[in-house]
Image (cartoon, rainbow, N blue to C red):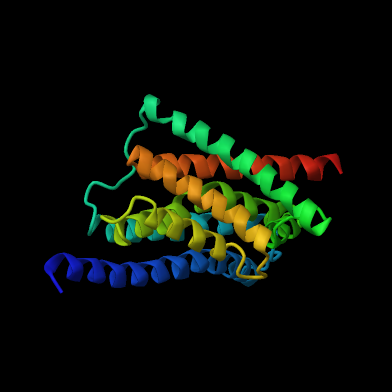
Length: 244
């Protein structure tokens, strides 16, 4: 094998390692935030899901998220030194708008096909789990809001766009790592219960996020789109809870 091929194989191996590390760290954020905050609150004689536990949960989440973001950025910069959270450029913000509109329209099309094929209107299993946690109000709702609006846009983008688009087939066909990013992002969000339409919906989102990153060449625009999409979903969730 020539040097270029060896470098590609080496990057693939390292990319797989960092992808696994990122997923483990992302899971650890959720586990330590809930178990740690509830355990500490109980040890001080306070309710497991009371105000102290909620404050501790937010603090632990932010600390572990900051650690994860630092580790993932370090890993990405090993192959792409210029990757980072740079100031936004007004002319590139249009991609956030294009992306959000594409996600909305694409989701409507997928849901329409779902109804035609299955005769049912249903939410993705991952979304239902989030809604069940949010129904706990207080602790559960704040935990979901922090995860969806803060953690996911930062951490998931560094994992599924940052790692994949910089370590996997970076110099190959433009769409290769875009489709890979979309597929893995979709699988990650349906692993608790695979459903084809749920997979397509999350993969569509992953596809659009990857395109936004590659078009702007800066990961903060994909993060911004992820933030806008999740904030919209959380707003709908909260309004639904209030109205009911």
